Length: 90
Image (cartoon, rainbow, N blue to C red; front, side):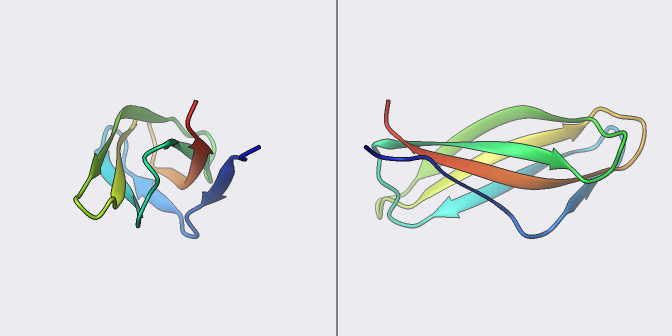
């Protein structure tokens, strides 16, 4: 049985109120039979960071980039960490 792998980026990110930004996570020789998702863990409270969109791209070397657009929908500066899940195909 295959298992899910998870982890997080070791640094915090900030977004001003109303601001949006793209973030990317890269994998080399990523197996096409897997799926990936990003998660957000707030480091400041209250905080309201929303995933606006998420998509992935690949190249001829089977390297994969997961792109995610995040928006701060709160009234203050949002501080957060990115996490990820990698899992076998369904």
